[in-house]
Length: 132
Image (cartoon, rainbow, N blue to C red; front, top):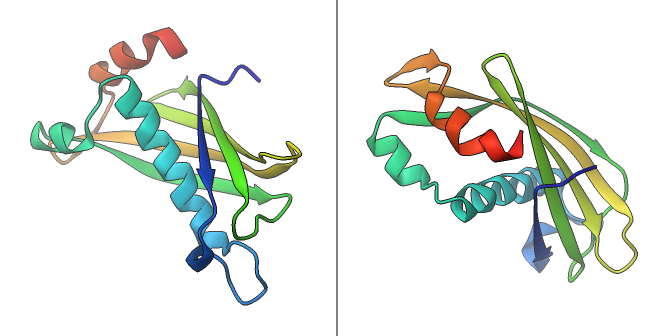
């Protein structure tokens, strides 16, 4: 894969369930945080977008769990993206840092809502041009 962004994070105790592994819902938080950090790295602020009436939203997410993370594990969350029609699809993979084992493989389909209406966003076409 030609990843365009990566972020290293560490599992916190409270993200784990009684089995001692990261609760499945927390992986969505990791994926979302990675997308937001990617956007911040290219100068995009969600708060500013919203003030302008532009809201990128998740339309669909698919996650395949491969290897569990445990408290204290460091991991690397990586992404690349493609445009499919009006959707931007973020392909995101999480790897355990010490052995590079794949933890989660995900695809996240996002769409843009402009002033309350589903829209093809020229803004994101321009912002993502170097990454598509």
